[in-house]
Image (cartoon, rainbow, N blue to C red):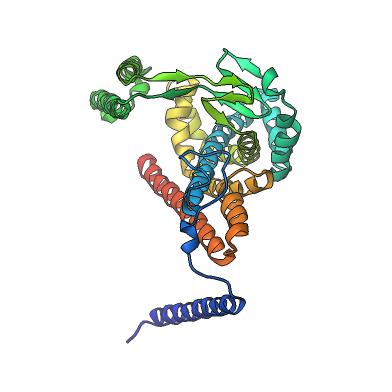
Length: 380
């Protein structure tokens, strides 16, 4: 006898397939009637425009497909930097809310209540139009150690350029990581029950970690002929080094400060979910406060923190589309805006853009779900 659930699922899939076919056929018919080319050949045409910020070489003679890759890389860089900054700030705020210090706790609460109720787009506008636009000109830049410059054209940081042996740098990083990992495993093998080294009142491998990383990486960097490139002032502003556009800075600050309010509340609720007995047991071990939080309380709180944190990260990634409001060259601004105006292919352009957002969001979700299962198995 055929399972009734299988029949229902088959009927549902058939309905979805028919609906998708009707939508695609109707769209294709309307495009043909309007004389709109519905192919994707436009991706290999000459772009004919420049992009202000790019992580890979790009000019007006490059293809539209390369312009899409440049915009996608800008989107990913914005999302990664914003997620890191929001996570660090949210962790600090969440722990501050749990502080026994009345003033610290109230300041963290005030931060959450204020910035959580201001739309993220409005915060981005504030940092872009009110703060960064009012910075001094290039000739009057704010300098730090004569190598970091801040003005209304962005933040200029020194960059490291490698010689022909740059491949050795990547190899040195891998070797250093392998050596540190091996030392950690050897030390844990001598601990009772495989406990963490910190549980015995310190981490004697820390000094060796730093020496190995600094020594191996530093030596190979010198052998590779690395040079520090500092931005130089020219007639038309600073050139060279790493340039962070005002639009990028505004987006990172605005998105980080807004999403950090939710991460802070998630962190607070995660620690608050730990039974009181666990907190007292951690205190009875005689460990320093920061070690008891890092080794005992925080791993348990992660089981509660990770699931809602996934939603915050996904919302933050999708919020990078707000960058189009201040003309930061990300996917929506470049591909949906500039490219669509040039070639007039709204259907395929929107479909490609939405597919990319769905794919990256699913990757973020899958990774965090995997990490959540790993943490749950580790601390259970």
